[in-house]
Image 1 (cartoon, rainbow, N blue to C red):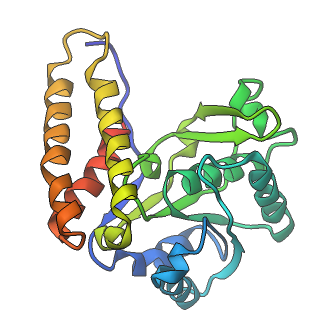
Image 2: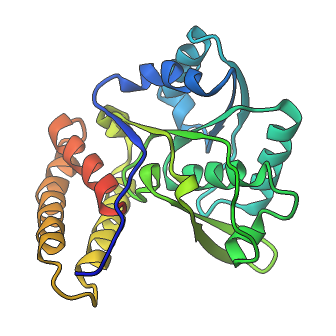
Image 3: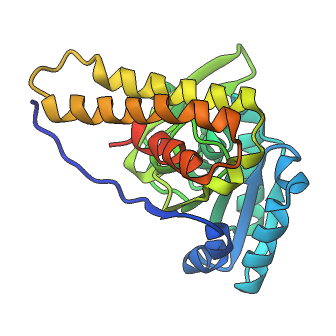
Length: 254
């Protein structure tokens, strides 16, 4: 086992109806929020309305930026940076999965930087100051809701790059397994495949004498394998959804 420093500063708020707490949590960071999301699914199934209500009840001013795509694009990140600068945004709330969260982290890191935010992803610059980010998770998969990393795609050349910094970790992540009830079976299975890959990346490490980590990986993998058949047969099985959602978070975090 090698030397290490352990810290995960993300506050996890887990359980039924927890998205209704988002306004109280976000209000701790200022009065103006950028609400960042992807397509129309959060509006179709009512999540969007519940989040708006919670934010407004907390007295927050909301600026919206939707349109995040899978493999989030640099162009939208730059648009978000411009909005945050112009509107003097205090906080970014990402509502979605890994792509939305990674896009929010990129925006947060670029607002106070005078150069191109892509510099962080190519190693030309180190992030100094970020706008705080919070998350309402809609699909368990990437683990970005509590991680220190972000991955985006530059359309010019289709370069996909990542960078990590402890400053990227979201301040809080709201995980309500009920939100994942409406995920199609294919998306559910894709998310679980992502979780399993993250677990196995840790399991097949070249570092020796990490028995505890190996046992944790085995437990997480067994949990995922035993619960995914239940979810595919019973999409609204809360307990199985909860196990998968929590496994997704711990699979790709410290």
